[in-house]
Amino acid sequence: MRITVERPNDLTQRPDPGREAVEALALAGYCSGKLTSFQAGRLPGFTSRFEFEAFLKASNIFEHALSVGDLAEDLETLRKLDGIADDRRVAAASLSSLPLNTPSSLSVRILSPGIEAS
Image 1 (cartoon, rainbow, N blue to C red):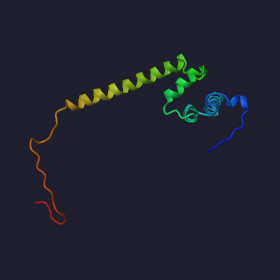
Image 2: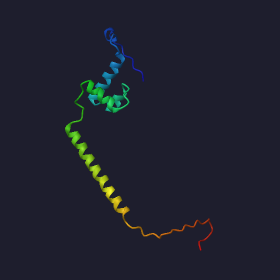
Image 3: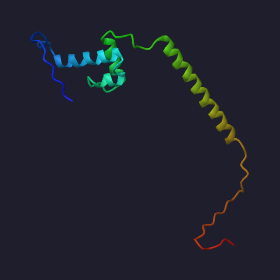
Image 4: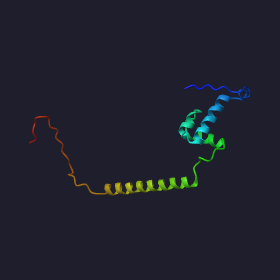
């Protein structure tokens, strides 16, 4: 999509007025909640969320940054997931230590269709 904007002459004297306009649009959309961080980051061409977060920080935008509470919730989630992973590792270790009740040698016969096993 192409958008054309007429600017006053004094704004065209800036080093990169087009880039500045796109960045301002991305910031406004993100701060208003109209754009997600992913959408807002794509407008100026950022390829990762880390680039967009660095751009927010450089633009002094901190109101959408993670709070201590957000980080505490993330840490709790990670601890729960780690506990689930530990439980699965313990279960797998328990299963691997069980003796298998299988014959010491296993014989396999492949039968062709229409031939009965004897």
